Each structure stands twice: as C-alpha cells, then as structure tokens.
Image 1 (tube, helix red, strand yellow):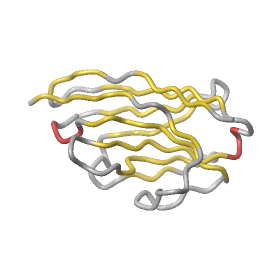
Image 2 (image 1 turned 90 degrees about the vertical axis):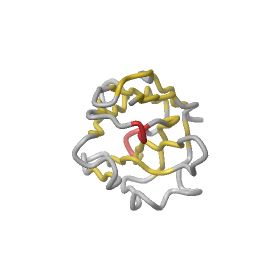
Image 3 (image 1 turned 30 degrees about the horizontal axis):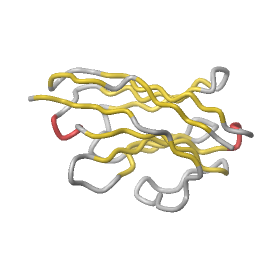
Image 4 (image 1 turned 60 degrees about the vertical axis):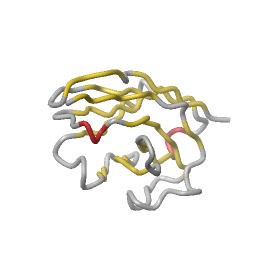
Length: 126
C-alpha cells in the first residue's frame, strides 16, 4: 500500500510564492513516476507537473517558467516550488504516484496513477 501526504498550501497574494511538499511512503518508490495535479473551483482536475526517477520533468503550459517540480530521493519527498502565483492557480493540489519509471504526457493521467494524497489548498488573491 502507498501513502502520500501533502503539505505547504496556504493563502498568498498574486505574485507570491509557495512550496508544496509530498512525503511518500510507497513500496518500491524507486520505480515510480510522480506528479502534481490540481483542481480549481468548478474545474476538472488537471496535471501540473511530473517527474521521472532520472529527473526528466514535464509541465503544463500554464505553469511553465513559474513552477518547478523536484524530488529528494533520500527523503522520499516530492516538491513543487510555485513562483509568480496568479489567482487562477487557486486550487486543491494533489501529489500522485504511478508505477513504472516513465511518466505519461501531462494531459494523460486518468486511471493511470495508483496513489493519491489528500490534497493541500492553495489560494491566491489578487
């Protein structure tokens, strides 16, 4: 069984920064693709960023140049550094793990990720 626990969400003004963390307790973590997803009010869940074990990353167009996904393998922790935040970034943010070393394209995720965290809320005010 796997367990993912997010933290680091909060309220911030537009232009501000937050760093989300996700502590991962997944068996054979070394063979997982990891990702951050979000679901804004009245919106469908969407992919934000993914990272493979060898460090290959992929981002949604809406966050490129502003968000950075990273991982600390020794600490089994996934991060999402979010800079230049915008009101449209307001959402519940989830981390997720998918078995297998390679991540699918950022827009293809439904039914593919085995484990999900409970989410952490990010609210950006204008």
